[in-house]
Length: 259
Image (cartoon, rainbow, N blue to C red; front, side, top):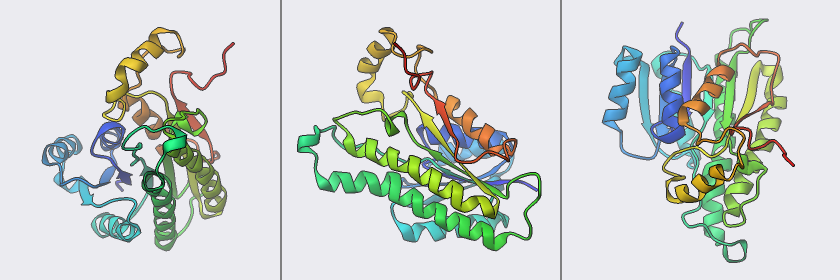
């Protein structure tokens, strides 16, 4: 049977790269995003899937907990099963601001989307997987959760503290859900991208171009959405059934301490 994946923010940037890869790997994919239905993106994905019925789109924000049931229900109603949740949707602060001047409203917005929303969407997804389950096969998990985090989970940027804290929180959420869901046959992983070329980094591209040129990253190039998608596809493949709570860095080696 066709495996089913839910991807938040799967219509642009890293998320679109993930959606493309999962569709190419044979998943039916449902995307949750805040924008109006992107006709061209969905047409591309449906052509890649070879069927309009294998790609769905739900408009809404992961920060809105009422949206979670609607997102999960839509996929189950369409396909009758759930295999993969990719918590990818995320935002940075509207304006990068020094810690001494940061606004609590912006802190709440970033954490609501990046941490609180995925935390409770994982809860909704896992509860539905358990409800749908007939039995747990001995040799592979029932379902997989992949949290797309960031190198900012451990790397400080004092002009976007709310973003760093949200991603550090995702790291702990990954560990928590990995332990809690292991008895349910659900494995949980975290993918930590480094500096990836998306609209989120476009405004600071000159700074990161210099960062690469100065030799700060062992693989001295920008990351691509397809790089992150490859890691997600590996973890979603079911080939690592005895691993959970793992962090997979997609950062060109940026996380490696170097003297």
